[in-house]
Amino acid sequence: MIFRQLFEPESFTYTYLLGCPQTGETVLIDPVVETVNRDIEVLHEMGLKLTYTLETHVHADHVSGAFKLKAITDSKIAGAAMDDLPCRDIGVREGEAFRVGTLEIHPLFTPGHTDTHHAFLLHSPSGAWLFTGDALLIDACGRTDFQMGDAATLYRSIHDKFFSLPNETLVYPAHDYDGRFVSTVGQEKARNPRLKDNRSEEDFVELMNKLDLPYPKKLDFSVPANELCGRCPETLPPGVQALCNVHDQG
Image 1 (spheres, rainbow, N blue to C red):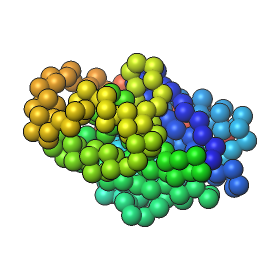
Image 2 (image 1 turned 180 degrees about the vertical axis):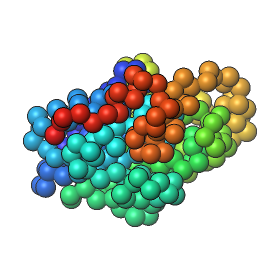
Image 3 (image 1 turned 60 degrees about the vertical axis):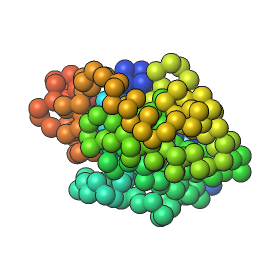
């Protein structure tokens, strides 16, 4: 498998490049509109052609790069089928492998951060790779106070879908705010302050409901834009609108 972890510093978002060495087919998980040009340059440098973009959920903290990447590279947009977004070319479902060349990516329905959130599990000769989106972060987890989030549901998603995997499973989150790159299922069981010591569901819900986090500064325009797969509505701030425009590239 060809792999690259890419970072967008304003929203602290990781975009993951997964490529098939046999066919050159490639997917970008959770691309960001600000880094579309960077992502295209990386693909060119690696001799790859973008086949798909794949979203873990409808993001509230950044605008997706999916629509712009499709316009430039003719890639297809994939995400949870249950979102029922007309702008997506492919709907993914738990129990149905999403194939990128010879790679098999297994969607896991993991609601709680949002009501349609999905994570993605990939097996390779070196072990299992889990792309957790916002559901499970390194020493944290996604918030549950908007977009139909629910703390009890998130608790069950983490325990039933993630913590049931082997401890050595690599955990690649959609964000990290402290310069960390990867964790493991075993590490998150043992060290995650919100989940360690077999914290009960009741205690987890109480903790999450008391976080008192600030209102996401991009939520009001990111969610509507991402419901269009990153095609920006005219109501976006001018600076963001400009990023969404497809110029003379590709």
